[in-house]
Image (cartoon, rainbow, N blue to C red; front, side, top):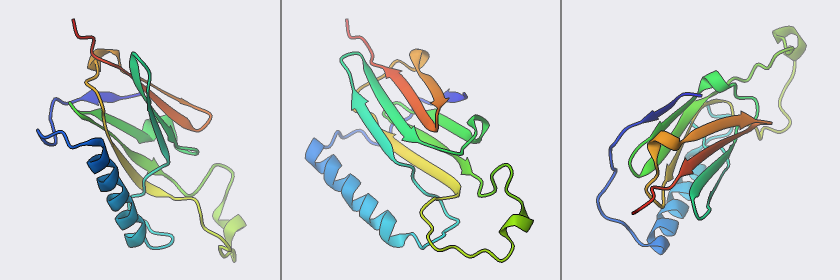
Amino acid sequence: MRVRFRYVTYDTASPSTEQQDLERLFHELWRVRQRPMLSAGDWRPPIDVYETPSHVVVKMELAGVPEDAIDIALYADHLVVSGSRQERQPGVTAASLEGASYLEAGIHYGPFRAEVRLPRSVDSEGVSATLENGFLIIDLPKVVKG
């Protein structure tokens, strides 16, 4: 899996946790409101971010996305994951879909992008990423201060 490191910061101020939560909520509500049904625009996969005493872990649901369609960029204070999920899956032909119409559309296709603000400094040399059973798991070891 390709992981790139870029030492760039988005901002120098460190907003409070409450401010970060409010900003995240506002952006999520705005993004959902702006997204039309069956949009071909970018979408954001579901993400869990958690912290252990020694690592920050990002778990992202990417069922149907091949490893070579995922790009991971690590910045000084953010992680950006982008890529694309194609609508046509192996074994599904245009002939088998002829005359079909969607009754429900809940799966997003096309390009995706997710930005995660990192709560701690991480060691870019120790980052690992695995794609297993439809989940991308990115393990980011924290910088040890000594």
